Length: 249
Length: 166
Image (cartoon, rainbow over all chains, first blue to last red; front, side):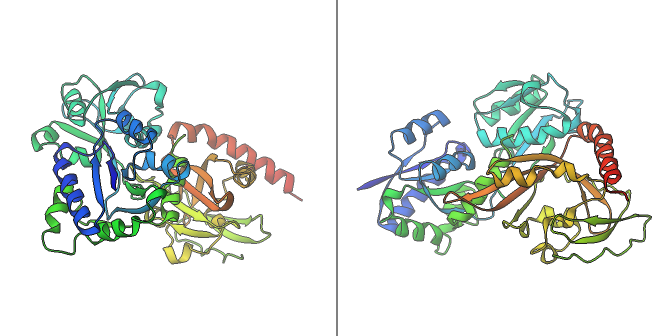
């Protein structure tokens, strides 16, 4: 039997090979056949979940809430020392110097990334800005968000912090960070469908062990997760979901 | 739980006697020093059903001025500032005990008598259909909203003190 392993579509394109390397290693060490699903968009991910064909998922924290509480997925791991943070940046030539300089009616570029949007909205609150006071400019990628900010076509852009850090040095030199979140409590999570309870211990053990053998660091570096993975309990996931709940409004 | 009285800080400070809902009271000293909410961060704490702190994140420890070991096991009202009227918290416990979310702007007292403003959200931790504790997350508030609320809180506080005056 082959299980489907879905990766949330918000990883940087250069990590694509890393996820395939991880999947290969996981199969070899767990003895469980895994078919990697890499949906290109949240809509594709939602479609795969709706068809009930996802057995293991590397979920963003926003989606994890529904998957754990409504669909019964079981949390078992998360990236070690890697939290989901976001950046609000403007073009380096912009007159904006701080978050409070963003005025109602300003244009902000953002990707279809729910947790970035949610955290970003909360960071805008001290500037007396809410969702309805911003002209949102949807973009397909963080690179596109950067281009619009650099060209001055938007006053600011929202980025996943990891994606911002992976922009080229030249691109970052043309941007100015207005604020970066330092929440340190919200991360992606690995979840398993309850129907694979029999296979989960082998998958979990294999995943958590990555980093202990020679060559593992190549895989983890390719993933951008140099510290590998750490166990996550049901209660730790529930706590994170409660925290996300406080950020919804 | 009886909290010890605060030690008078070296800076000029107003002395107050706070009375808590558990029947205890303590003397606090409040200075006019405001500590800014750190950019981009969230203050996170959890309590048990009785309101005793069971978890404090780094931002909470740093901004409160207490050590983590001093906070854990203490009642959450250790943060209560004498400028906060009781009515501002009215409904907090009623709301979260009903399994609902509560929001409010709160002026908190630091260990050294200085203060910080937050926009607080509290949610019940529902596990297996039962409330197992509470999570409170505080984020950077709107200064505009605080400035609107300061006179309101001051008026409410005056009314409460008038009502309890001998």
